[in-house]
Amino acid sequence: MKTDFDQWDRAFRTQNMYEFNRHPNGLLWLKVRAVCRSKQLQRFVSDNHIVLSSSKLADRNVELYEILLHSPEPMSLLDRFLKDKDNEWYDEMGVDDDRLKADLYQVRHYAWGGDQNNSLDKYLVSRYVKTISNYATLTGKQGEIGENAWNYVQASWYNNWTSYLIEALFKRHRRVVSAVGEIKSVDFFIDSYPIDLKVTYFPAQYMEEKLKALLGTKEVTWLKRKARALGIVADNHVKDELQKYILTEKLHDIGRHHVLDELKSARAHIVDEARRDSVELMKWLYGHQGEMRFGAENWLFLVLVDTADMTASWKMKRAFELIEPTVKAYLDHFSNGNLKEIEFEYKKQQYRTMADAIFVVK
Image: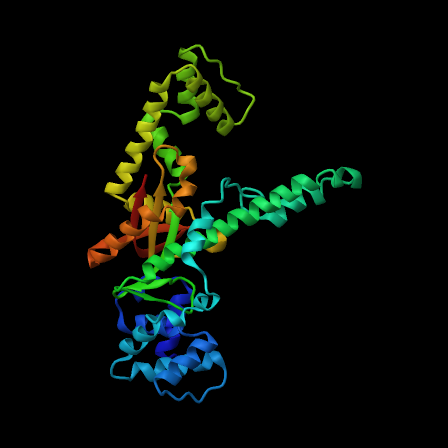
């Protein structure tokens, strides 16, 4: 016989996250999952004088849900526990937030080791292990291999700890209840909504598509045309990204800043349009996510943009003087109308969810 717990478990596993929005039993199920780690579960039942007869952790979660389902004020019990910062798993690490914020500014160079999928092991195997048969040649690549490994570690470290600090800004707000057990698909709850925070930069591919529509052609083609009119010959033997860099540098060198200003203005216009109405961008982000990390949960996007130099937007993840007041203002004024309904297609399957975007623009 299927129970209420099983129904919500099936909805969760099939990415039918829309059903959890503002449904009391669905919210209860998620918040029980948020205390599902063994130590947290034991502390929660002990604090609230709840006795569980099951010994297996999975069975104890089901039993706790059924008990709370028939309790007078289950949400207040769970919220009180989840709002207690001492129950956060990472709090035991004793991270010095101020020291960490200062250390993040020591990262001067941001580059992924590995291939375009940020997979260092596959990159090393394909580039060195399976393509170089001569050991002397391989030993000559030690410095190059070491640099790739360091780039991967440094970029991963930077992303991990900036994400930790940004997420903490949300969790410390009075209207936010943390999902301390770090369940998949939910970082925290704002009022009655389960939220998965996505810190991202303005997507380059989306910008490229919008620029093509605005300029009437690809960005690199537009730059070539402008450069040719000024007597600058493009090198057609290099890839587009390098081509754009070379042409930009040459235009700088001869003081033709008006061309670059025109391009900068076009980018700023696209960002402004997305800020005014973020639904199209959010739908694009849902539809272009990686298959391994696919999700249809309620996403709250924190979009970081450096309009002066979009390639330097990675530095915005440590710009807490800009991020913190923006996040606070958003949460202070959060209402039901903030989250927009998003319908998107992924792998020929239709999904429905709720989402919103917060822009932090430099």
